Length: 325
Image 1 (spheres, rainbow, N blue to C red):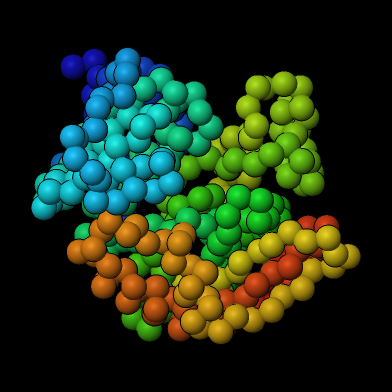
Image 2 (tube, rainbow, N blue to C red):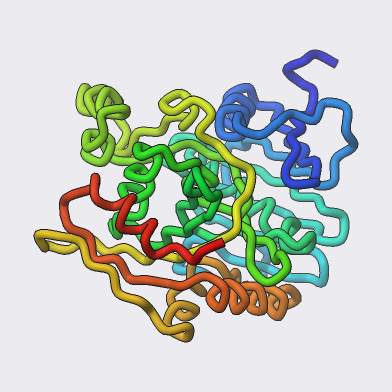
């Protein structure tokens, strides 16, 4: 077997994840996205995800899906077998009992910004949940002196990535740009690293000296709306494996002179968190998932952050909100 055809294996918080990708372009993109994870060449896999490229998206089953999300994803459930149908990008077949996902994707999944990385996370997340690891859509970083983690949660345009970049520029450690893992731990919840590239618009990178050159390259016409880069090429040794969650922030960019931080009540924090954490089709894991999120908002204070223009003031302001160790 040639090195190019061997399965890719990585260590991920006590698990060995195997990726199979016969297409060279798909394989290279996957390796780049997972470069922060240690390799596990000799270990037997706990989870397997096999993806390949096809010319056209296969037809979905001839019945209504049990769950549909805004025309982007359709879920067809049959016990431990799940078919996730993406009308524009392909299909994933999940065998929840075996820890196996097989998928076929069309070229648009590689050519459309962020889609491949999202599909890999969707392919792995149900298997991870069944092993006590729960993904959340957020930026996660850890304060370097006390190893306390924060989650920055928000939709497109809320300022999530810009706030995260401000922390990295101030020396904080990266847990994930987009999909950190949550795991119950004693009286709190730990945030665990999940691989991926930093991704931001040129204007966001332009705000920080260490990434200003990326903004210039983007404006020169790379042809993509966002720029992606491995975080470790900007800040060596920036990654950290895990830290206890000490605060949750929900940013919102506003036309204001300075930042403002407002504490959120527990029910409101949970309400805001749910759309970024729970996959509604996965009813079997819903009780455990909701219990974990409840533990999270009880253990880590939550805040709304109204963002002004001074990104340099963010790290100190957010650190003052952290729950002590």
